[in-house]
Length: 307
View 1 (cartoon, rainbow, N blue to C red):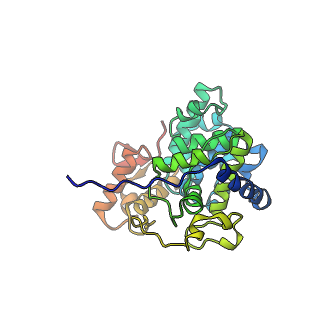
View 2: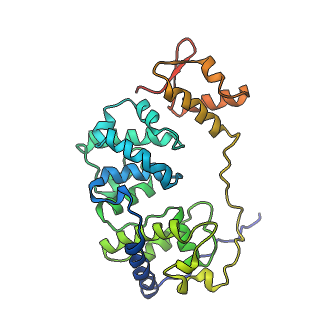
View 3: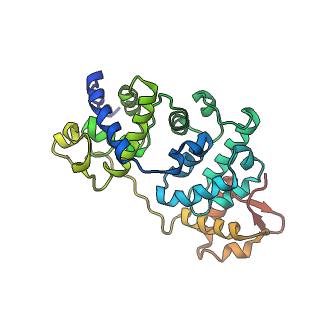
């Protein structure tokens, strides 16, 4: 039997080490944070939740117009829950990964049925909502309710990888070691911890970026382990790419675009026209049906889901 080498543990953090990072990052955030609608008090917990669903694997500039339209149409969870799931898919437009629209609709329905239409404050109750995973539950509890949770998105993981562990990039998938490190770095005070979560995310988005980090503008450059080590190149597994052209994802998007624009069920022939390769097209359509994004009807007709 071949033994795999153990994953190295991150450097130990002490309260003093953590404190040296907290103040400069939070001060930088207060001075440089973007004015985003989901950060405003009027967004409320529902606005925060909507933003977290939309921002998964989607840049802010694409989310902003859709977010505004969504909240204008469905300002409360009950408003979305009262509509057919297909309307959520239709309104999702070209944000990508449209299963998120169905999951958000399911979460809105559960919030309406179980919690009187109010996004729950309790982390466990958030985690119990359909479509809500550990990251989203922690983000909503932290950003909407000011609670103390480790919020680990790609940007935060990259900041921690560089500043603390000295690696250019974090692992492809979140590890237990990263979660332990994130918990160790959390400030003890709840409001400060919530600020820290938002600040590290913004630092990764604006300064400690994946391709061209602006280390000269970083508030913790003088205590960054990666810089101190000479900015060593990534030596782990190849980083996953974001190929889109020619993939099943592209075909699925084209099929959904036809259905979003239609006011009545769409015949198979109209869907066949969107992609030249029949095997891939059929596979993509079958996947949409299996995911609940498309509802097949008798006579070879298709529509967005009504239930």
